[in-house]
Figure (cartoon, rainbow, N blue to C red):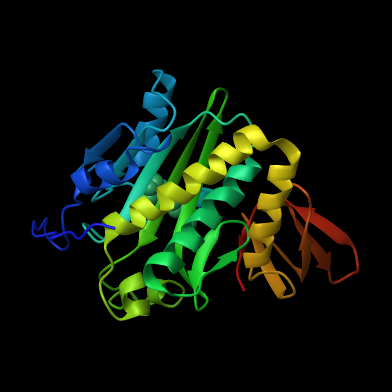
Length: 267
Ligand code: BTN
């Protein structure tokens, strides 16, 4: 992987070296064209408008600062200018979108371990964690004809001055004890995702179930007693397993096995 001087400062962090990323993803199906935004409201929002306008599959939007970053279930995604990875891909998947949930979380988890040597786990369905702290959030928005895959990773800097966030999230730099190259990490994620995406596109059910099995093996949620937040509604139970589509099989306290397709696992 390349070395980056990263000498340009954009305030709190650094300007992403987009040329290094372009060079690293040149051979891939995902990651070109690369559209860079020093600041944008949300890469997912803009990617969706490009997708509606016919943007090619694999178009990558990456920003050093989102002013209105969005998370799952209506949450906001806090920006750490120049220190995170915040990007979205325009995709047109020819396979069921829940496999994109699994592929993206797995690609991020594997790439983080490859670049930082940190152990990673996946909190159902697709939060990537280090030591139980959230490192990465993934927002997938599907519409007829396209899907937008948005990934936010807390790479450099620190969350320590935000105690509420620091109670459940961490940056890779704080976890590893040193800064991490955002360029190398982005390239590593796109390489893994590209491979998984190709296999999901052409491999059919065997590839889908192989991916599910790899994703399941990284789930830290299984075997635990959890509380799941679904809007105003809360359910508590034992996270037994996931089904063939990645839905969570939750054994409720009354003994009923509930199939859960969305929500936020609290513990
Ligand atoms: C979550 O954990 O709730 C998902 C967070 C997803 C954040 C990423 S950052 C890039 C892309 N643009 C957005 O507005 N959101 C996603």
